[in-house]
Length: 247
Ligand code: ZN
View 1: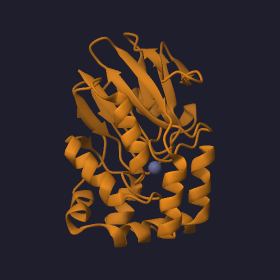
View 2 (view 1 turned 90 degrees about the horizontal axis):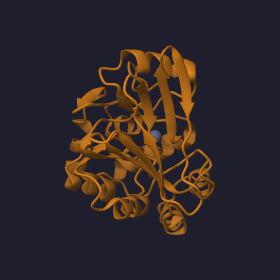
View 3 (view 1 turned 90 degrees about the vertical axis):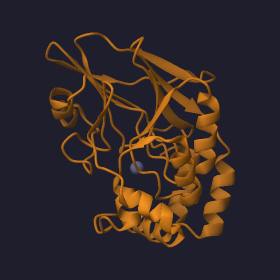
């Protein structure tokens, strides 16, 4: 089984389409680790596309805030403004779709899916110390997480925790990681719609669980077109500018 692993699409339809184009014919089962909406200008278009894919989806903090499942109290003012704007745009059926999304972790044939940390969907996993619980306690040897918008992750083998940073070479579409027996993994496919690891290209992963290979993809997209729609929508300027830098 080849999984298409999407995360943190953040209402960026152009980036999602570029990713789906690049991944065409290479996967059988799509999964999404949450934050379908928030920040970006295309909430309904992105939800429609994810629903049409038939993806297994768990919720992210922005899905909760935009749909009223949680308040946006802990959001910074810019994120809160985007959440409010998003809520105003949502069609009733898409609002209902966001509201019924389950929290992680859930298991999908050998892969565990979470948005943030294993035991707290809203917690960020940036550092090895934050990854340890997830690595040790996840129901699956391979766990996919999102939330940080950083592509890469962590592995644990014989009491040794390692940071995994795989980035496709400039000009290449993906970098591959071999899943070794007896090793546990916490892997972030990166963010489709708002990368923050310094590479502005849309990020996702394809997990080939038969051959135990995970590909970490980066795909360029028309960033200016998205920035133009954000400007027209009146979304906060810092959110518009950061897309160009991937920060
Ligand atoms: Zn996010």
